[in-house]
Amino acid sequence: MGVLNVTPDSFSDGGQYFDSGRAVRRALEIERMGADIVDVGGESTRPGSVGISAQEEMRRVLPVLKQLRGQIRIPIAIDTSKSEVAEAAADQGAEIVNDVTALSADPHLAEIAARRRLPLILMHMRGKPRTMQKKPFARDVLGDVAAGLRQAVARARRAGVWKSQMILDPGIGFGKSAQQNFELIARLPELADLGFPLLVGASRKGFIGKALGARAGGERIWGTAAAVAATILGGAHIVRVHDVAEMIQVAAIADAVANPRALASRLRTE
Image (cartoon, rainbow, N blue to C red; front, top):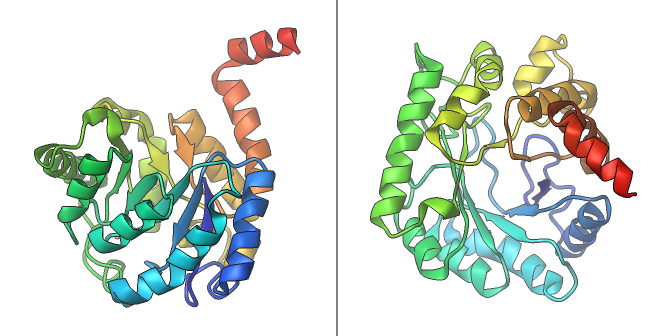
């Protein structure tokens, strides 16, 4: 999953694709580089960020989605926690809803996913973006994440979302300490016991920078590569990344390590 932030203030590339024309070109570039999904978001959820209105979020993302219709072949995910934005984005061709609040901000989002049969990504976040890195962290991070995701699944099921539509995300970097982020990656197989596909977004995040000696976001590509490989080997089905071309190679090798027989079978047919 390639990241496309149509925002002026995202932690890694804020403002780089705020212009709709540049955003469209980047989405097509993400596709050409080999991504399977492009994740379009109009609201930054970095630590300390302040939310925006649904109207402003739609003003940012809908022109991009409109221009991409008929141009892009891979599915578009809309990264939003607002049902109004999800509905409008689906009207413009978005095929997946990615909610970083796991329905806690707007439970009606599940109704949109259910009615339109859209895959729904539910991500665990402890607290809210403005304060999530200031609040006390959970004593048992895996238990906290698993409990929160179970509650989100229950909310979605009550709204009519099928189990087969749901994907779970442990929310790396969202209300967790650096140590807890590494623990979650190490314990991904235990989260797989929840019975849903897993998405993990570790790309360029602060815990990687801390482990590398306070490196800035753009200097975390090799650390990101290691984290992406670890998540795939731990059972992640989707990895959400900024550096698509590089992480395509990482994913290919991690997949080969995880399933060498599948690689051998593919090579025999080529």
